[in-house]
Image 1 (cartoon, rainbow, N blue to C red):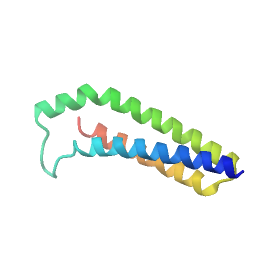
Image 2: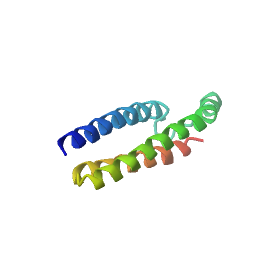
Image 3: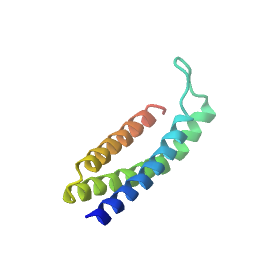
Image 4: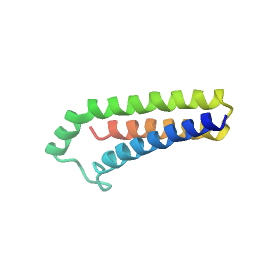
Length: 100
């Protein structure tokens, strides 16, 4: 059980790091309130949006698997953390779609 818990914790840490990198890169696109994107910025986002959405989908799938594995291992805290991460990624996707 300890080994399984350690493996899940390591997976969660790796997933969290990947999600953080993605969130930071998306956050760099954020503009101040009442500020509009330039056409160049809009074009950049539209060009990279499919790749970013694919990364989000991969991370959300892994978070879902991690949540299920945590549930099976009866690791309630990890299960809740994986669910929270999935919700954060969903929020990132929603905010990103508002850019274009």
